[in-house]
Length: 504
Image 1 (cartoon, rainbow, N blue to C red):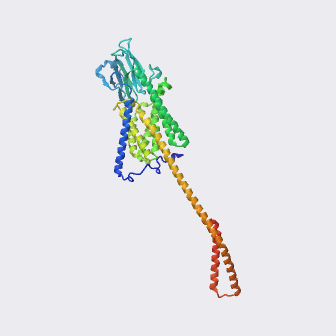
Image 2: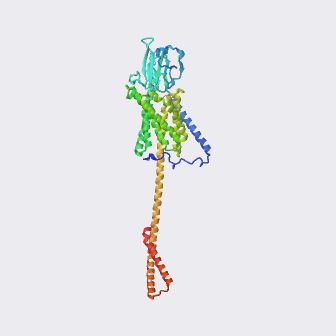
């Protein structure tokens, strides 16, 4: 499998180092910091720009709010409080983690033949109750219970958001009571029916396009994982698939199309997917950045995140949902800190991969900062902050795909480099073999040419030796030694002749 290879290949570099370009290390560090800050500003500006663009229609009337800390007051008691306890607030409010009940009220305007709709977002608020004056029995209130914990099939209208027809007379107050077991932001608006229907249709269309695009990326990642037997592509496919399903559930499409009579099941699946989505993403990043020169303490921070997410999933599955989501009080700051550290702590020898890693970690950092501020009631803003994971999920889905495609390219370049080195080695070995063969042939030819003279010399030496023996001259010892040396030299030359085939 190719997953044992490093994600950042040291043999493939994007360019020269700052020292090679004549830039001092201190100046290079400031340039990198400036680039990161500009990138963060660009991401934040794009986030806010898209958020305001998708904000939808403004409420036709002002919205007033009263907080019931006991969560025990009824609509009659709240209505009897009078105007003094209500304060005008923006249409969107961050409730944070609280047991209180939030009461919102709006005044019915002169409809002039228009049909108006009272709308509450987002689609995952636990309990939403609408109260309107009863036309048949003055002094009484008509209650409509909705929310994520109530069956979708029993709603009066079919929008994904919680909504009722505004049927009161002009000048009458209408109330909305909101409670939730987790931190949540709420937007209350009174809209024309046509505007409410148009927003609902656009929400469904946008959700379908969004989830469909991520699903296509998941399918492509799965095919790459099967073909390349690469665990990073497999993890990315799982992460993208969970993202697509989570977005589908996040907008209430599970309530509407899958389990309209079983809200508890839809709510449970949404909560599980919310945690599993972050768990899959954290595990993916832990494994991916582990292939880089990441500091060990930073990896331990990511290990702690995985541990907290597993604990949260177990608690939510065990039914203690509120306590499980309270872990976000520790998890969200930890995730934001880890993302900020990763922006500067993770390095890659490839400039493109370094940029993609930094872009993604900055997006994660921005998301968790917004998530923390929003879910603790510190800020309140626009549509995108009702569903704060949307922008991050889209950014992450695209960037992860680009990162893995870049990794494939780096691996391909490394394989090409290795193949070229192997081919050069083969050519060098073949050249050396040819040279040895040529040397062997030359030596064989040389020894063959020497063989005849050696034979003649050996024959002459033998004749001379026999003559000396026949002459019986025993006093010419130097001549005998010379003849022995000649004989030894001939034997050595014949020995080389015997070794010639081995050299060849």
